[in-house]
Length: 383
Image (cartoon, rainbow, N blue to C red; front, side):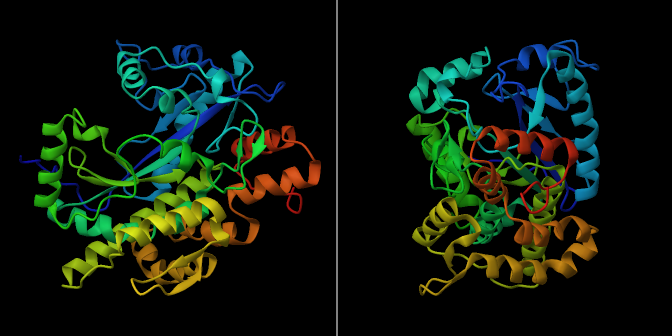
């Protein structure tokens, strides 16, 4: 089969950020996305909003951007939509928060959005979908040439622990500390066609892979392939999907900048005739697990010979390598937020610090609401 690539005008950006609806009094999730979205201005004739959309569960709203040129532009786009969402949520006594999982609310209390697509998904996949009370952030970066998409995706897979370590925000599940940095990764990973992308060499190989999946009835369209990094030929983008939903707009800008810089860097390397990095599949999977478990404290495998290094050091070195790219793309300020995360702590670390200081998870929910509303990091040392 042939899959056409819709070329992008350079490394454009698109962001999708899943946001939790929280009751500030009970600190539990509110299953009221229908009511909140119905109260928005600017709805289309079909009752939909161009930037604020339903997700799988009624406790979540997805905030999306248009096609942006820079991380700052993406942040500005999101900020406008978030103000609209906050105005619609306030009359219902609902606050907003960003995290991969809610620290307290149980997945059994979640309510699915009544849509044919989601109903069919539950019928097909059953229990793994019913417990999908998780939130993520996805970043699209444009590519002008789809023939190089798989090489760039394989190279990005070597940086998966960097993205996950910086964004992991789901240490708690149903009121328990899981011991993980990203419980969301395990919950979402229970679905088929998830996890690290398979090591497909080129676009012809991707077309053959999708053709086999469709013929076998494993998927009905390529949109049902939910890899951690995947090509999106309709948009002409590489989509980076392994990140937990972070707590602040500043961190969303950070992730967008990191993604844009890396795609641009690898794209430029191909232009110069260089071979991009590619890890053995078991190393990609192992590194993702290490970041899922330990976050930034992971020790990751750095080459196909088994060499290792602390992830914090690897993130720091990557940021230094990307500074010239960020300067050219106009996202140096957004990328620099990652250095602040290395000092103040990733979201999962900040959540645990609040819990350790207060002794209860209610304060963690309060901190998540504050971080989202005030766009600042909350830790006992920085509060």
